Length: 127
Image 1 (cartoon, rainbow, N blue to C red):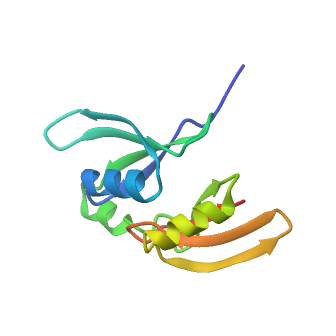
Image 2: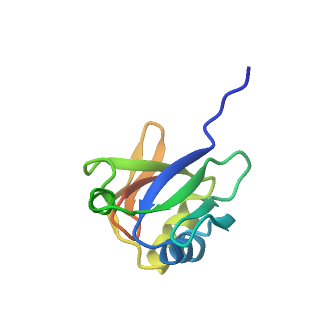
């Protein structure tokens, strides 16, 4: 039996602004953008690299969902992006004026910094 985590749903305010941010600022690839109805789309983005888990960009449709945009984990780091070129990715964050919340610092497991995505979700960049 083979199990693997394929997609993680990320609640967003707007499909197109999220696609633009993840592809143009973080360099993710748009894997799929399929219209399911007048208001719902199946949108997948993923970082470069083989075997990457994909983010399912899920547009908030209710007040409760909208209240979770940018804070899906109660203020904790939500997603962990591993890189083989920490300095290049760190410079990319700075170039695109992406808010770095902490770091970079050297930990036992490598260099790490915490940054915010366009909605305020916290990410670790680890190299």
